[in-house]
Image (cartoon, rainbow, N blue to C red; front, top):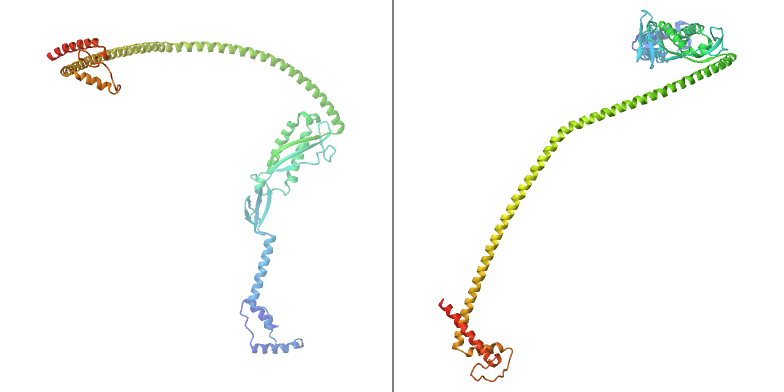
Length: 446
């Protein structure tokens, strides 16, 4: 046992776990025998090595480390060291030793168990609706100035003020709705509604009452770190008998109000008709004045325009006169040019005709002279050879007449003289011969 205890102590101290020697085993056996009959069962301890059944130092260290990790995990799960906030929440961390308070909204913050305490509040808008005063037959109905009980549907919308001293120091109760808002609302609402009659609460003073409640309640809640958003007054629950009487009274009042509004409407319609007539009159007068001014302005504008138009027209007339004069001069110049061109053409044509006449006269003269010379030569040839005429005649008639039978002339003339007219032709031939001789003589002289 002593040896086992020593092994455990060595393992906890981190010493090496070496096997015991034979001498140590013998000593352990002797001690066990001397211990008494309780250890007789271990007489064969030399053969059994109890050191192998004990854990080693490394195993013990691992066991201790695992136990420490498990204890730390349980502590972290039960008391997480990091606290996270959701959107719209406000966290207050208070130090238990120093009493300081730290605010945070986003992310996480370290929270040490036993050192810090954390409170989380919601910054979202919340609504408080007291149920005890909603019904006239409820547990805590409201009272009017006449002492009549009635119910009211009241809604208070509020939110925490993160900049207030109560929130910064963390002095807010866990249930803000029940500990702050509800007492403030009930303490104010009963007192305010006790100043008014049921008729005023039901009809005419509802907005005024809501404004008073909202103003006073905002001041009360602000002192406790609560921001009042709005106060809304809904349905007013009256007793059945009173409600029926109120409904009939309201119906009569509505009828009288309707009649009053009807009379006012008719009066306003009459005034509207008068105003429409006056407006129409004024509109016509203004339209007439505007038309007159427009005509005056148009006349002035036309007069001003004529000042510029007349010189322009005068310049146009002068321009047209100059254009007509220029056109006349151009036409005169063109006519003179055309006349001169025609005279030149006529002169050229006369000269050409004169030249042609002279050329024709010269040609005729020349042809006559050539013909006269030719006839003179032919007459001289015929005179020397009289039978040449007969031969020529025969040659010309040879292709038309093949046989000619005629009596010979008595005077020995050409055999065809009888065919040509006899003596008459002879005389004509003689006359022609004399004329030819006469014409040949001057031409020869020339």
